[in-house]
Length: 424
Ligand code: EPU
Image 1 (cartoon, protein in one colour):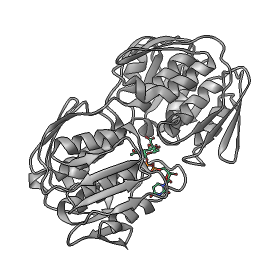
Image 2 (cartoon, helix red, strand yellow; image 1 turned 30 degrees about the vertical axis):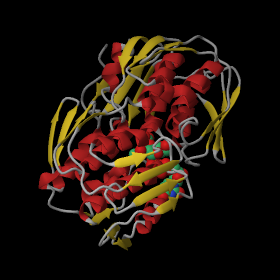
Image 3 (spheres, rainbow, N blue to C red; image 1 turned 180 degrees about the vertical axis):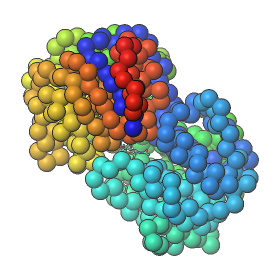
Image 4 (tube, rainbow, N blue to C red; image 1 turned 45 degrees about the vertical axis):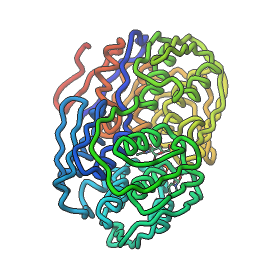
């Protein structure tokens, strides 16, 4: 079992290049199945979730070639729409195979998804969308069986704003007969990225990025080339890490607009954050003001940065309250941060963080991806060495995390069983 060791107390300085967005990649890869010819994706992050998706496509006999951050997907050899068990359960985003295979083949059998355990994560809105498009949807031994003689456009109102349901309905509707209208759609940049790829493939989708998306079904979609947008959550994680270490870091290859809710909160705390065309320059300081944060769908503060920013708020001069309105029990990081000396309590869907904590290194375990990021940030500021296990969660979503941190001056090391801490 690998562990990440971090010696705290180093100030992060320098420039960091942000990778392609995980939550775009895991939707664009299945979207490519809808094409008649090869799709080439650029800026694909080299993370575990993408590796798992690659394996899933190969199980369906799809041709996948990867070289660095490029991925070519050739759906011409797709030979099955059935993937009920196995790797499909390891990945939340495997649910996009439902929309993509239904749209491509008119039928699919896809295992119900796994992923981070953040409390209940239903997919009723996905199912409502598929059914509205004319699909028969049945539960079949832990998998969802979908079948439609012909998918027909429909007007679908989402009862909850859902990234996954919005994308899945776009995938299924892109080649349906007639017009589909998604109302109360999610507006995340990753949704715009998926619509951009589908439109480049020949689809007719308007309104992505607003709460009403109109999809006019087309007969065929074709191969193309597309570059994935930068990962706003990875960028936000490094912005918070820079602030936490009173550092001076240029976050390169970002779309600053996508980070506005994060930049605004950091500035409210007293962090200096200057935006350039494709970069944000973050300069931290020793003392920060406490702030309250409520997570909301985009353009609100992202739930995926709720855990990382909690570590920073532990250092602020006063009490902050972080409320997660998306996942009401996404607080598994709190117990681990408390082991490091943080003073945090969970009240309902909020974490109450008493600041001015002096964190110290100890052994902690990443219980999920973003909780892992929160522990990394805490470790960077802690006195002594923090040993973080559960690395398998972190590598799901952060490309070359240890290497990137070291390049900024962090003192880190990966310990596999039998090896010991080496001076970095
Ligand atoms: N919801 C329902 N019914 C549904 C779908 C969602 O009740 O059919 C609820 C969820 O339980 C949640 C809320 O609606 O309370 C929003 O969920 P959403 O569907 O938007 O989440 P998701 O698509 O499953 C994506 C990201 C998550 C991110 C959320 C919110 C991917 C693969 N995952 O999940 O990313 O937290 O949107 O922004 O895109 C992460 O990267 O660490 C991560 C968990």
